[in-house]
Length: 318
Image 1 (cartoon, rainbow, N blue to C red):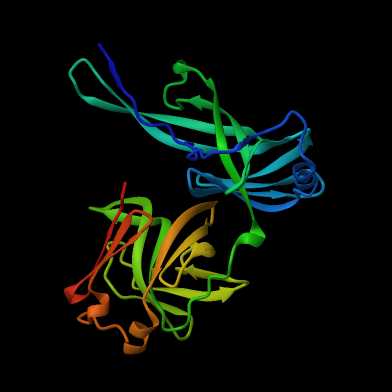
Image 2 (cartoon, rainbow, N blue to C red):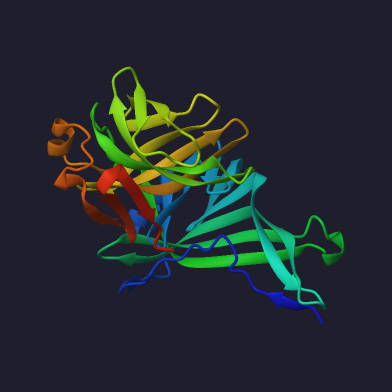
């Protein structure tokens, strides 16, 4: 008898609820005014994470970019709703594992395609501002097993926040700055097998647009190129991969960044934290034995550890 092992579905977009005022039957005037001026660029924050960028053009078209890719969209206002249709669905690919009669694990590819979504004014929170309810309409299929058919799916999230682009701050580290930086979905390899994963690097921003990798990484990266442009840090490897970082929140040490990454055939966004080394350490240069570099720093649940001998480690909270 086949036994299915459930794997958590992707597209989980939830936020922790806090005391709020319930939405009245008629939209408050400030909410209606915001809807009428919704044109421009917005970022969706859900479950405390930045995960989708929306661009609304005046002609009813625009763009959606999420962790899985990008799509041109058509959108319209319907009362208190923003209705969005993806012209090319973005896809989440995962493997569902089952056991055969011999107890052997078999992986079956599942593809969840996002087709449309709506954002509806839900309630007003005195601390967090406007809260939106998001309905996501998708289909789930098994490309290698068409006999399983296509299933319609709806995901409902009622604690979503929209962040205007103007709320982002400049992210402009100085030349000579040392920082830990995450490259989302970068090409890596293990035992000859190539795959994409988030790569955490310790780099120094040197002259000549060179970002020197200070600690060896299995990806084989030794250096990247970098520049500052329109309030963002951009890095690229010269082989088709680039990423631009914009800051949403942060202090003198840690930054909460939205990473806008590109491969030649794919554009996507992801939230990636960054840790910047204190300017005092920059003045001393990179000295692995310096006490400034010893110990671990926590960034949104992740640990960044500087150890003797110049060893840098990253521990994912998940």
